[in-house]
Image 1: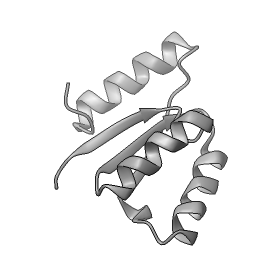
Image 2: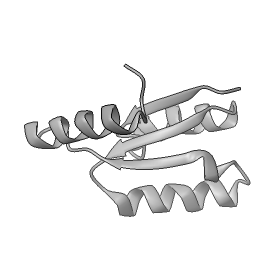
Image 3: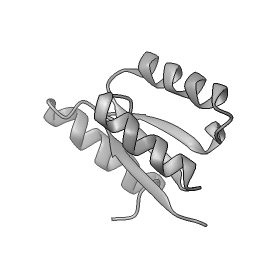
Length: 84
């Protein structure tokens, strides 16, 4: 499978459920959030469960900040991380 999912807030309570669903189903995952520490904790969780943690990447995004959203969109368009 060659699919990729973007989960905004993917290390939060609800986001983690969606993130884990995608990983369990072989879908690559981009987690966009403010807190890299929570992302690292989530990757450790995936390792413990023996899930494919290498197919998960993190992007910084603060949805309460216009500049953060603009930077996120510009970066992903430039690097083609996400197809629009």
